[in-house]
Image 1 (spheres, one colour):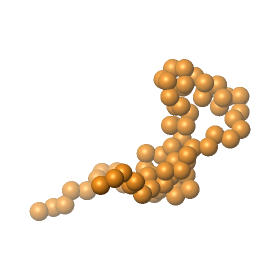
Image 2 (cartoon, rainbow, N blue to C red; image 1 turned 120 degrees about the vertical axis):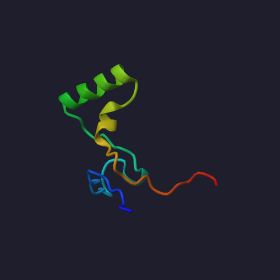
Image 3 (cartoon, rainbow, N blue to C red; image 1 turned 90 degrees about the horizontal axis):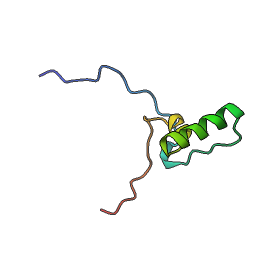
Image 4 (cartoon, rainbow, N blue to C red; image 1 turned 45 degrees about the horizontal axis):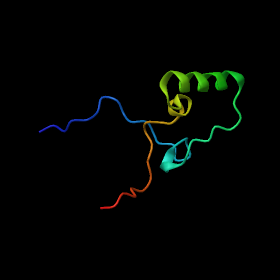
Length: 68
């Protein structure tokens, strides 16, 4: 029996990237364009779309701290 494999390989994780290992996304100083993008995302969607767009889907979330 042939093993099924994904058609697209998962990209490498950046352990220091935004949101990696459960770390917060830190905005820092924004340019006027970035600030406008952040404000538009908040008003249109009701969440911080600016941060969400910069956090990778392919990241480690860190240790699972939920009770067993």
